[in-house]
Amino acid sequence: MFDIAPSEFLLVAIVALVFIGPKDLPRAMHFVGKWVGRARGVARQFRSGLDSMVREAELAELEKQWAAENERIMRQYPPQPLAAPEAHVGPAAIEHVPHDPSTHDHGHPEGDAPVMTPQPHIHSDPLPVEVSAPKPAAATEVKPVPPASEVQP
Image (cartoon, rainbow, N blue to C red; front, side, top):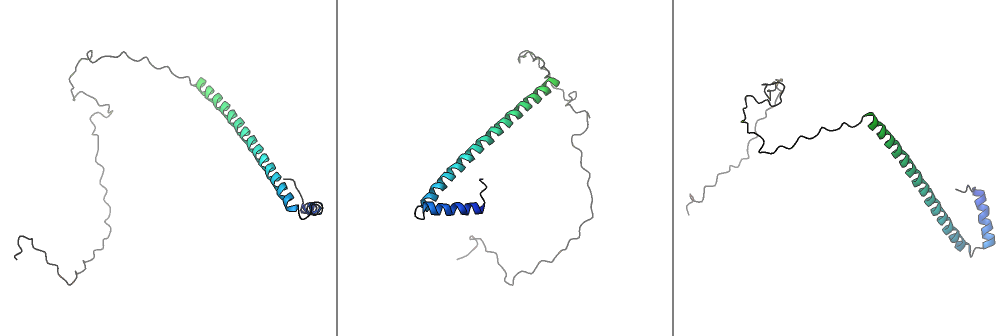
């Protein structure tokens, strides 16, 4: 910040020790530290203010460029006016026509083509399967419990 060499700093420390004295030197260093901290805070605030002003200026410039580009595109491709909406027809004015499914086209260009076609079945070689025999049960055999109605007292 101030570009003070170590030899210059040592000279300032010796002069301060001689003129201020060892008794008041800590208080003086505390005072100098406060002022250096305040100066750094002001410099930091000033720098952040300048940075924000630069960002705002860049943003305004980008907005101007965006607006100019948008205007150029709108001139090149003018919006097409929409067709006038048809007059509203009430339900009483609509004549009831019965539905005939044989003549009704559902908008499919294929006509009578099926909606779903079965997918081809692909056969692959079966994978080898290892079958292991079941392990024998424990030596104790479990007997089923008869229902309470069959148990005699």
